[in-house]
Image (cartoon, rainbow, N blue to C red; front, top):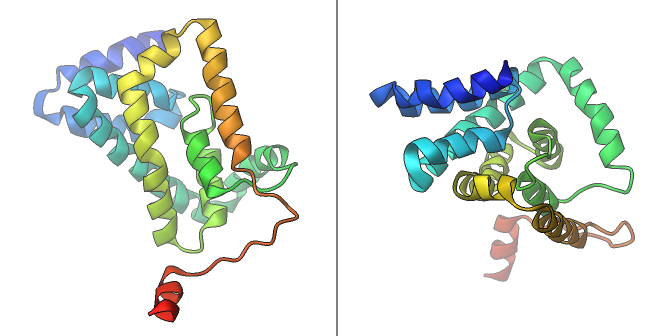
Length: 194
């Protein structure tokens, strides 16, 4: 059934004419209900609209998906308990940084909403959440739209090399528990130095 749906969606969007970008953005919004991976939807965008427009439409759709997740999470805190169990398993070795979240967004099998939960936990306001969600979506949208098929079709050796490379970068950005971290707000920093 999913394979038939995967084949029918691009054809339907392609035949919808001027409504195609709107339907594509809506596909990003209903993607979790259809159990479609982010990389698949972004690749469809690259196929239908090309790299530039496909990336733009994917960025819009994924950003809207993050915003919807934020409000659903606020409205239904019980939903977050399901993610909390996955969260506990991931964070046994310490919290992940915003840089690590951005890198994990580029890993095709990373859970999109679990990463959104991490962004929620590390930001103080809705505005910051949207900002970091948007910034974290730009590069994966471009990569998945333009190179998504290449990543999937890579021979096993190159897939392993890519996974090792991303893992090295991921663990390189890990926050050490022994380090003390000082956060200075942007406005305060420039106010004090001027």
